[in-house]
Length: 395
Ligand SMILES: *Cc1c(COP(=O)(O)O)cnc(C)c1O
Image (cartoon, rainbow, N blue to C red; front, top):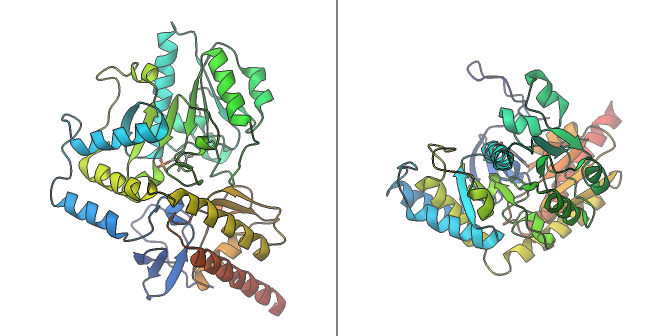
């Protein structure tokens, strides 16, 4: 098993970390302090869309760092305007607000929902989210997050009602004209990579339209090509009213975005919301470099093909899995028991995968992963699994 890395005396111990220190990366590979190569199939939680040290991203960041890092949102800047234009064209939603993280994007969306109610004389006080949802850790986003262990120590939170994910009838039963917004992840990430049944998003869209509620799609994890389309809702023909982005958008440089309709954008009058860092020059240069790659012809088809290949390979490695599921390169392997030991053994065999809720091994590799690297991920996971079998046999 990996050699334990002792808890650092000057770091707050709020994370359960793996016993490894990564010091360098190249493409899909991470290198630890001893120089050992690990194939990265987790992408720093679906962030490292272009892998590590991608030349285009490196060049964009380096040249922007040497030009201008930050001026604040007191001023205009062309990189932000270009990125907003591109996100609008890609999403079909015309207005963009930039922030820094996923939780901030959802936090802004909660405020938009409040303004939406305000615009209707306060007649829309209710917020609805889904069971199994994860929307972030700040108080507004935490209120939308269903997992009891994340939320309960911080009660009271603002009122949010939860309905089962993927069940349009359950949503229909609680939908009335007093709902300001329905928040959901088109593919749930944290809760174990849950893909809703076909038709669900269209039914949610219809219910929101019927009751004048905002449909907020949290694509912090599923967006920017992860599922084989630029945004996961683009597997359907619907448009949300509000789209939350972060994680992969900057390829590792923190940046978040809230993309929205004109009607929603009109609610945010000057001074009502803002952030110091949101969409600064460095972050926008990085995000534009990510989009340069992800929008190349055929790139998303490659993500879809490699996702299918990886899923098939994982089914062969884990025949005992309850389910192998996902969309594109967001994949969950639901195991019969806690997969923590397999994830840990991966570090011995040079493959990085992560956990998700419900005994799930989560894979969210760089979108630039090759077919051969997908096969190598499976090969190394098979070795990691076999090593555990050997340990069990010895004991
Ligand atoms: C990760 C995540 C968030 C929170 O993003 P942070 O950048 O960690 O604040 C919100 N929503 C979804 C769907 C996520 O996966």
